[in-house]
Image 1: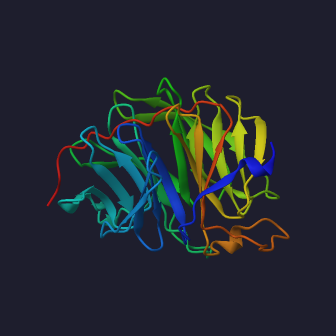
Image 2: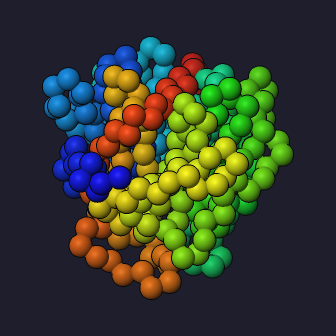
Length: 302
């Protein structure tokens, strides 16, 4: 495609833009800046951008059926509304803080959340993939991850994709939505060391997996067998995540990050160029995405 087809939708100077999520009921896009702890809401009709500060670290979002926002971040999982602020759902598990980097609602309304403790050294503790039940309880689904990142489901909810950026792997799991359990983990994509690292992820309506490449200045589309179907250049090196949305679910929103980070994971020969990131980009290829599931967490722990 022509690079000019990608446009800047918002120049919000995000230090670490992440977590884009489309709300079809309000026709708006949510996304966050992890470093400044800001929550942005872009209104599709008015093109206005509302900037909010939830008051807790924010790295990933899910929406509830009644219009509330579930926030996941470095201090756990919270339920947030503009009127009541942030209410704790799950902040620790077995005495350890739920330091969440990315999250997604599953078909039954639970929240799947990947923790991270990556600090650039060789002896940091590895993280877990958690499930936060609808009553707020947390349990581990899988463990041993360097930097938990993008998650996505196939349309039938039977396959879960989950990214470990440090190991440059996108995993696929069998998923039992009835029990909230994973099985048969396998490598879906092993990203070469010469490319950027896989970050945020989404799955389109055709069952293809889209992955943003931090340090790679691109988004990649993989077929259901894990074969690269296309690579689309993005004019920002730290391309962090992406989401489908818009009236027809064919608009693609791409977050980026302005603050250089995790350089130890950069591919050989990487050198920062003109634009590291910080903008929200947009393009439309006519490929439909699929709406994310609603989170149905109902009990708040105090």
